Length: 237
View 1 (cartoon, one colour):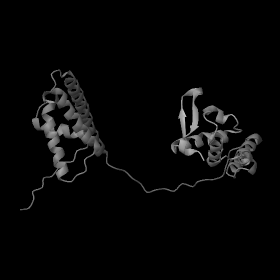
View 2: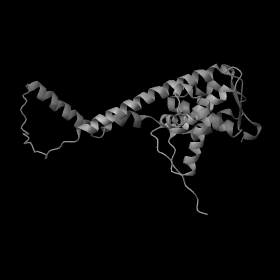
View 3: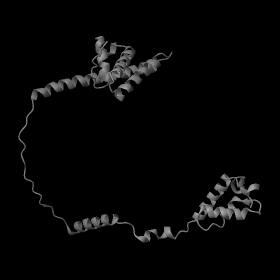
View 4: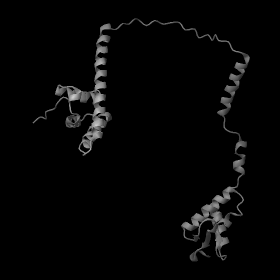
């Protein structure tokens, strides 16, 4: 048997759909229980899904809003549901007024008709007629030159401080720490940084300690200034 399909009306938004459902009751918006519209609204949404129509997010948002109002209305104290219902009724009344006014304006606009004429080409004079003081031209020139310089690569001197810094590898600090800790018992954690000559060396030393601790080659005990570090029994040699 051939499947019977029903024509789904197109609505501009969820408010338009609610007004359509209310119009079926043939009463005022204030006289229709909003909760009675929840089931009808959800039925319409299911029909849209069955027709493989794309449901706009605003329709889904209104569906969630109606379900929430119905849910809180089932609570023993449902003042919130009454407040939300009054708020929705107010929005529906405002939307209805706007829709009515839009219809009246559309009727008035249709009475004027449309007027057109053949396009006319106007001559355009591209001659620059403004005058400028010499200092304005000078500032414009300096600004243009500055923009041009900003597009150039930075000079070699800009990298001199970066290149001059000695890069300290984590591997070199691991060797340093193993040599220092072997056969000398425990060491204060902060003492490992006392001879660091640069920030790069301090960072490499700290990362070396973390690497040794992760490999369980050293143990770290205490906290703050009392933190000590010691080689594990299997790490010597």
